[in-house]
Length: 117
Length: 107
Image 1: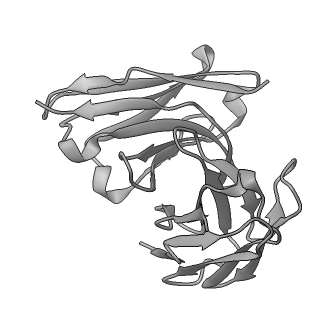
Image 2: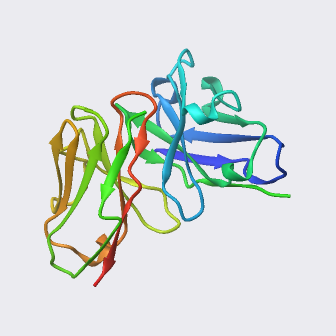
């Protein structure tokens, strides 16, 4: 069974940093592109970033380039999102998801990031 | 960036109704479009990919059509479990973007 479990969310002050993790199981992690998608409270979905199965290609939504970094460790079956210079507008539930040709069949349960003083 | 515009934003319907949601892209995305269903507090669920392909295990009352810039998502006979928010998403080019969502409510 495919499982994606996010962790690392929580309350952080504006300007702070946070690293999200996504533990994958039930499939060959090193064979799939992976994404982060976020959803602000009461708002719609926003694709954040994705990473190729071997980590050699990464793409980001323009508005987050330079502040967020996606990475993976295939030996640990884990996906990461390093978030720096956090702002109130980054408050959201962050989902990791397994890609299939640009769409996502498998999603984690999400982890809530709250940026507030 | 390609903008995705869904309409309507909210839709009130009754059990058994046929429901159609429109998604328009600001430029051609060929058939690179997916549709998702999301219920409160849950992750989205993929229903349709490549504009018209039904994801495995998804009931056949759901369907998608369209290409280029105009796409349609239809529920042929609305069931109680279908009251949710639906999103379109393109993956033609980066950055991938979603429509703003359509909430399907009970009439």
